[in-house]
Image (cartoon, rainbow, N blue to C red; front, side, top):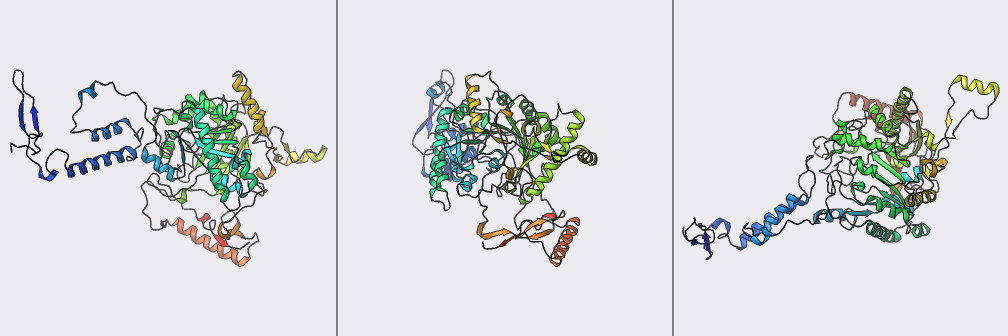
Length: 592
């Protein structure tokens, strides 16, 4: 037992005052441990053990278990753990102890996060930014239609760059389409890249991705050449762009390049909103109508997330440019409290209200959503109409000076998106359908019912005018310009209720593998009335479908279980049973 570990080294044992230091056999001073590979020194098995511990620590550092109370995945404590695993025998060097602690800030993205993000198609820029080509960019390059921003605001989708200057976020939303591959944090505490470098590298990387689309079948050569000039930037890729400390300089750089800015924030950094320079269009995500639902849907890091959201909306009142409340509808999670949503919209007096159905991005451990939580376009329309009714009630109760008048302006069926717009800002010169009538005829129409409105919507943006105004504001901060100064007329095909349903008629809609919807029109109960070609169904077919629907309604009322396709349901998963949808997703293969 006195030979220690058998390594041949001597261990000094501290002695009391006045005594000499003693030496014992082996550096451990203990018995040789056969089960650990022959002692404390660097044997082959010891090295494997250390490597295994380092691997475990690295996994904890890169991707620890999700917890609502955690501030950030890449914490300083976890990085310190990894360093401990690399030191020998856990004995501190006296020279190291004498060194002052490092004040150098760390990079935001860990090596593992970098690999995960790159696998999903992100091109990382510097240490905390990213750019990714949008599918709508590729669609419009091929003449297959533009995104909802093209329909609502007139952007050219194939000239739009989707990027973020901050991959970090203060929320872990259940519907985040990035499956939480990015870091989280409340405040900025990482290395900071220069805004000019971020913009330059992002544009260059985006153009490289445009170059890669040249070989895609159907790409229009003229559009492909034009796509090399970026004209719009959607600052909504992932994370929280407004966390970036030099966001204003980045916005000014984009504007100087004649690139419009669509900046999306989750409303958790109100002070940053207050300090923003003019933005082409500023969004605040309103993901829930009350504090309880906000905690469930956004899973915020801030304890006062609800108060922060409300403060952010109040600050939107003082902004002269376009502001948007962005509502993402998740059935079973945040789709019920309509008065709560109306209160928040009225609180911000926002210019526009975007209502969009959540996009299901597949199952992951980070989310308990399933396909039944994704609304159809007609459900988003119903939701938006209910919201409009609540806003009208508030306006009648409180007056126009406190609650602006909103109305249905645009829709983009492919994106399940509907737009409400302020009448005073975007349709001030609208007319009623009785215009032109005179005398008795006009009086009779007015006596019967309020005349329907024909709005002359101007939700599109005059981008050249915006850049002129933004440049003047950059030179003279005292100069102010307003929403009305850079609006443009909305084309008829983009207006809500148009036959095109938001699809630009200059493009051609594409159906994969010749698949078309089996039915094109439905009655109020969801029973099909017209077939794939738009022809009205015969009486016998309509009766059979009605019978099927009635059976589905009875089953739902009886509480019959919902099938999960053999998969195991996750904790917190909510299945939505709606018999009126059973015919909506059916397709038929038809050759053009």
